[in-house]
Image (cartoon, rainbow, N blue to C red):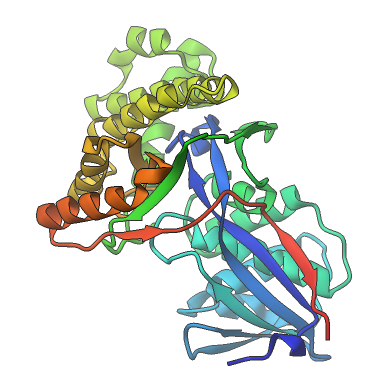
Length: 376
């Protein structure tokens, strides 16, 4: 165990749940994520050397990164996200100082709740703080995304890192992924609450078909842009898609149809929350899951079984997979006084269907980056 009083600051960044708007961020669409109280915390202190030393609370590995050769961290099993984040921060012209970091992550790995974004964002923010530098959360998010894309090799959109850095307590972010314009929408669910359930099927974005789906949406845009004038797939309307579907192969059409219709669901969801229509939000979650299952094909039998069990519970207004898919989590809107019954019955039904034990997480909607000076 480490003594946090030996460190100067604790800097945290949030995991995230996307309420609705899945696989549209890299298509220039709007998404509706919220930051979670599940977070990555970085305890940091200067060490007077030219190295960044990293240890972890949950694994015995220790990493020592030379500031002048951060590329060497690419092959690390643990510490590669931190190395990539430090490199992108440095390459953007920011100062790095030698420091010791202890990383403590409560975002479950492989859950689809963006542990990688929380690690990247908190690492960059911690490096800025310990160097005595002010930071802009949006720049931190953009450089964290760059670390994931260029260093870790995941061709991700901006949503995860943006929500991790810029989240606001008790609000969802209506984020335009093309312009980075944002609007905070109160996530007031009244007698209902969000329940996050992990299907506990291991998954990895790098090894999944995530990059393949992204390539398919790029293929759709390439075909549709000349006839629609769209600069991103999210700008294509449902009418335009149907009119020009003959330009697309069947599978690429299905992928594009999901994106176009999901963008409309995001708009409807934000409007529903502004007027307090939680039931409408629940219906949109169910429709989103069906589209991700049938058109985008990123759910799989485990997530389908978990969402189906949730949707069948009388206290649940709606449920869908959240995250990239191929494993990970569902998010459900559940009556608060029925959460225990919901967990028990959904867990039992899911285990009967798949043989896996679902894990249910206690989490609230929280702020993005936090910085706390540690009192001695």
